Image 1 (cartoon, helix red, strand yellow):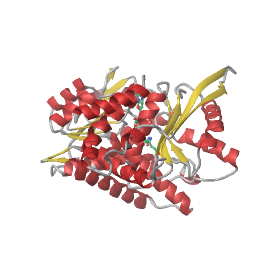
Image 2 (image 1 turned 135 degrees about the vertical axis):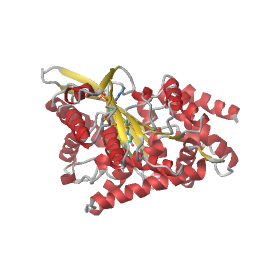
Image 3 (image 1 turned 60 degrees about the horizontal axis):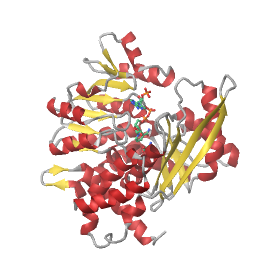
Length: 446
Ligand code: NDP
Ligand code: 2IT
């Protein structure tokens, strides 16, 4: 089996030189799915995975804009339309200086499996730019978003490709991009998700990824007859996903002791309660400050510059910042400190070596494509509401989100059970694969 997997990966690597993140994502899927393909005649011999790793379309474009000093700036914009077998392309836009083809292809590839797991009819895509919103004024961000959309608009549409937010793209950026799309097309449609509630957005979409991660982790703990009550929880990141993961953990009786950003992490041993979290939301979302500003108001907390929070002893760890932020040595430290459950909020935050540690030690471990699918799932519900020209209540959307996370959890169990251990990596990859593969086979060689 190893030989078959290695041969496949060598073939993919040859065509995708210099794309380490993409190869990392493909390797994880190949290791889980190829043994399954080999055992199932309908998939075997169809080159189905080879078709899945080739994006249906890749668009790359110039984004020129003028900054506040009247200097001309040039960024690169992308949209990767990975797979539309089960629905229109769907996935976020990331604005971060680290954005390149490899990063977006890995994210688009993950999105295909994630969207398949949600039970909703969405294909997979991802896009973004190497634009850095940090330190930019609102008017600079607006001019950038308008220039970006002036090219992107011809490639997207409510039945074709529906972008949303990701790192560096929140409600402000979605607003500017939606405004420009509407102006260019003279059409009010649900072409983006994550919109404001007064202009077509869904209640619970801002909370959905973070809440969904915690609903998923709750299901994992339930398998061990356990819950979040009294648990010490370590979270990385302090953006959209981390903030609402923290909010839900607090509601369920857990104690959140860390949050972080790219400058380091804060450790509040007394626990970050609702009031402290409100302050963090003000700092990060309104003032756009660095996380260590927390110490000005809460001096008992400590700040650890340049570090990630995995060294802090905990019961549950929720990596919610970015890819490859949790390494093998971090995994060993978490295990040594008695961590029971690692549930990914970010996309691919754990390195393959770290995942190997978790699986080998039979720690509850959920890959992001399963546990962070709540965000795109509620994006799917936003699309449904837009089509209905109607809005559901908070309770309605939250209940649907809970049910979807429970469905994803049971799909992982169906395909991931290994004796008394649930291998969520295997389960998520196979369950995500089956739906897309079946649709591709039905639609012929296209
Ligand atoms: P935000 O931009 O709101 O927040 C990102 C957070 O992660 C910030 O605290 C940021 O710190 C930190 N971060 C980003 N890059 C790095 C880095 N290279 N090193 C250390 N810290 C970093 O993004 P989101 O919360 O939306 O996204 C977080 C993760 O969740 C991403 O992996 C994203 O793909 C994933 N995700 C997001 C979904 C969504 O609906 N938004 C859905 C599913 C997954 P700083 O401010 O210093 O950069
Ligand atoms: O990674 C992700 O799933 C997202 N950034 C959300 C995508 C979406 O379309 O809501």
